Image (cartoon, rainbow, N blue to C red; front, side, top):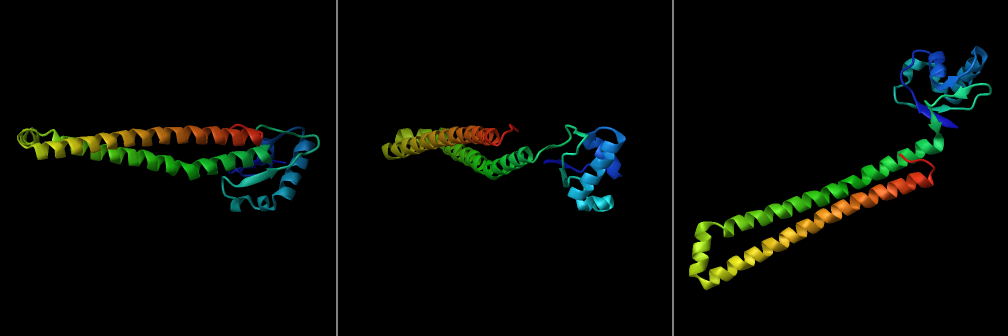
Length: 173
Protein backbone atom coordinates (compact mmCIF):
# COMPACT_ATOMS: atom_id res chain seq x y z
CA UNK A 1 0.00 0.00 0.00
CA UNK A 2 1.19 3.49 -0.84
CA UNK A 3 0.20 6.82 0.67
CA UNK A 4 0.08 10.43 -0.51
CA UNK A 5 -1.32 13.73 0.65
CA UNK A 6 -4.36 15.44 -0.76
CA UNK A 7 -3.50 18.53 -2.79
CA UNK A 8 -7.01 19.95 -3.09
CA UNK A 9 -8.02 18.30 -6.35
CA UNK A 10 -11.53 19.31 -7.39
CA UNK A 11 -12.53 15.84 -8.58
CA UNK A 12 -11.73 12.22 -7.85
CA UNK A 13 -10.75 11.82 -11.51
CA UNK A 14 -8.15 14.62 -11.17
CA UNK A 15 -6.79 12.88 -8.06
CA UNK A 16 -6.66 9.55 -9.88
CA UNK A 17 -4.81 11.15 -12.82
CA UNK A 18 -2.22 12.60 -10.41
CA UNK A 19 -1.68 9.26 -8.70
CA UNK A 20 -1.97 6.77 -11.58
CA UNK A 21 -1.10 6.34 -15.23
CA UNK A 22 -3.11 4.13 -17.53
CA UNK A 23 -6.01 3.95 -19.89
CA UNK A 24 -9.52 5.28 -19.25
CA UNK A 25 -10.75 1.96 -17.78
CA UNK A 26 -7.63 1.74 -15.59
CA UNK A 27 -8.20 5.25 -14.24
CA UNK A 28 -11.86 4.46 -13.59
CA UNK A 29 -10.76 1.43 -11.52
CA UNK A 30 -8.24 3.70 -9.78
CA UNK A 31 -11.02 6.15 -8.84
CA UNK A 32 -13.10 3.29 -7.44
CA UNK A 33 -10.13 1.93 -5.50
CA UNK A 34 -9.33 5.37 -4.08
CA UNK A 35 -12.95 5.79 -2.93
CA UNK A 36 -13.03 2.29 -1.46
CA UNK A 37 -9.82 2.87 0.51
CA UNK A 38 -10.56 6.50 1.40
CA UNK A 39 -14.33 6.84 1.95
CA UNK A 40 -13.95 10.51 2.94
CA UNK A 41 -13.11 11.25 -0.71
CA UNK A 42 -16.82 10.84 -1.44
CA UNK A 43 -17.15 14.56 -0.59
CA UNK A 44 -13.92 16.34 -1.55
CA UNK A 45 -15.19 19.63 -0.12
CA UNK A 46 -14.76 18.11 3.35
CA UNK A 47 -11.20 16.85 2.76
CA UNK A 48 -8.48 19.18 4.00
CA UNK A 49 -5.35 19.73 1.94
CA UNK A 50 -2.51 17.71 3.42
CA UNK A 51 -4.79 14.84 4.46
CA UNK A 52 -3.04 11.49 4.14
CA UNK A 53 -4.64 9.17 1.60
CA UNK A 54 -4.16 5.48 0.89
CA UNK A 55 -3.11 4.75 -2.69
CA UNK A 56 -3.87 1.08 -3.41
CA UNK A 57 -2.46 -1.01 -6.20
CA UNK A 58 -4.83 -1.06 -9.17
CA UNK A 59 -4.64 -3.73 -11.84
CA UNK A 60 -3.74 -2.17 -15.18
CA UNK A 61 -2.78 1.21 -13.71
CA UNK A 62 0.70 2.27 -12.70
CA UNK A 63 1.18 4.45 -9.64
CA UNK A 64 3.03 7.69 -10.32
CA UNK A 65 5.82 9.04 -8.12
CA UNK A 66 3.18 11.15 -6.33
CA UNK A 67 2.78 8.41 -3.73
CA UNK A 68 5.23 6.49 -1.56
CA UNK A 69 5.14 3.13 0.19
CA UNK A 70 3.47 3.32 3.58
CA UNK A 71 6.69 2.16 5.27
CA UNK A 72 8.63 5.00 3.65
CA UNK A 73 6.11 7.60 4.74
CA UNK A 74 6.08 6.14 8.25
CA UNK A 75 9.89 6.17 8.41
CA UNK A 76 10.02 9.81 7.35
CA UNK A 77 7.36 10.71 9.91
CA UNK A 78 9.18 8.87 12.69
CA UNK A 79 12.49 10.48 11.76
CA UNK A 80 10.92 13.94 11.73
CA UNK A 81 9.30 13.33 15.12
CA UNK A 82 12.60 12.14 16.63
CA UNK A 83 14.43 15.15 15.21
CA UNK A 84 11.75 17.53 16.47
CA UNK A 85 11.82 15.98 19.93
CA UNK A 86 15.60 16.17 20.26
CA UNK A 87 16.28 19.56 18.67
CA UNK A 88 15.43 21.47 21.88
CA UNK A 89 18.16 19.59 23.76
CA UNK A 90 20.84 20.83 21.38
CA UNK A 91 19.33 24.30 21.38
CA UNK A 92 19.40 24.38 25.19
CA UNK A 93 23.04 23.29 25.28
CA UNK A 94 23.92 26.04 22.80
CA UNK A 95 21.97 28.63 24.80
CA UNK A 96 23.65 27.49 28.03
CA UNK A 97 27.07 27.82 26.40
CA UNK A 98 26.25 31.34 25.24
CA UNK A 99 25.06 32.29 28.74
CA UNK A 100 28.23 30.89 30.35
CA UNK A 101 30.40 32.69 27.83
CA UNK A 102 28.49 35.92 28.52
CA UNK A 103 29.03 35.61 32.27
CA UNK A 104 32.74 34.95 31.72
CA UNK A 105 33.05 38.01 29.50
CA UNK A 106 31.24 40.20 32.04
CA UNK A 107 33.54 39.06 34.82
CA UNK A 108 36.62 39.68 32.69
CA UNK A 109 35.43 43.16 31.75
CA UNK A 110 35.20 44.04 35.42
CA UNK A 111 38.65 42.73 36.36
CA UNK A 112 40.26 44.27 33.28
CA UNK A 113 38.92 47.72 34.09
CA UNK A 114 41.76 50.20 34.65
CA UNK A 115 40.58 51.07 38.16
CA UNK A 116 40.37 47.41 39.24
CA UNK A 117 43.83 46.65 37.82
CA UNK A 118 45.29 49.65 39.62
CA UNK A 119 43.63 48.67 42.91
CA UNK A 120 44.73 45.02 42.49
CA UNK A 121 48.34 46.16 42.09
CA UNK A 122 48.06 48.13 45.31
CA UNK A 123 46.44 45.34 47.36
CA UNK A 124 47.73 41.78 47.52
CA UNK A 125 44.34 40.58 48.81
CA UNK A 126 42.47 42.28 45.95
CA UNK A 127 45.09 40.97 43.51
CA UNK A 128 44.35 37.40 44.61
CA UNK A 129 40.61 38.05 44.33
CA UNK A 130 41.04 39.41 40.80
CA UNK A 131 43.17 36.38 39.88
CA UNK A 132 40.40 34.15 41.26
CA UNK A 133 37.76 35.94 39.21
CA UNK A 134 39.93 35.56 36.12
CA UNK A 135 40.40 31.85 36.85
CA UNK A 136 36.64 31.32 37.26
CA UNK A 137 36.01 33.26 34.04
CA UNK A 138 38.49 30.99 32.27
CA UNK A 139 36.68 27.97 33.74
CA UNK A 140 33.35 29.32 32.48
CA UNK A 141 34.87 29.83 29.03
CA UNK A 142 36.18 26.25 29.06
CA UNK A 143 32.79 25.00 30.21
CA UNK A 144 31.05 27.01 27.47
CA UNK A 145 33.37 25.53 24.85
CA UNK A 146 32.64 22.04 26.18
CA UNK A 147 28.88 22.69 26.02
CA UNK A 148 29.19 23.89 22.43
CA UNK A 149 31.23 20.80 21.53
CA UNK A 150 28.62 18.56 23.17
CA UNK A 151 25.81 20.34 21.34
CA UNK A 152 27.61 19.84 18.03
CA UNK A 153 28.34 16.20 18.85
CA UNK A 154 24.73 15.65 19.89
CA UNK A 155 23.52 17.12 16.60
CA UNK A 156 25.83 14.83 14.66
CA UNK A 157 24.76 11.78 16.68
CA UNK A 158 21.09 12.59 16.19
CA UNK A 159 21.59 13.03 12.45
CA UNK A 160 23.49 9.74 12.26
CA UNK A 161 20.87 7.90 14.30
CA UNK A 162 17.96 9.37 12.33
CA UNK A 163 19.67 8.33 9.09
CA UNK A 164 20.28 4.88 10.56
CA UNK A 165 16.60 4.65 11.47
CA UNK A 166 15.62 5.66 7.96
CA UNK A 167 18.04 3.13 6.50
CA UNK A 168 16.64 0.40 8.74
CA UNK A 169 13.12 1.29 7.64
CA UNK A 170 14.16 1.29 4.01
CA UNK A 171 14.40 4.94 3.10
CA UNK A 172 16.73 7.86 3.63
CA UNK A 173 14.95 11.14 4.28
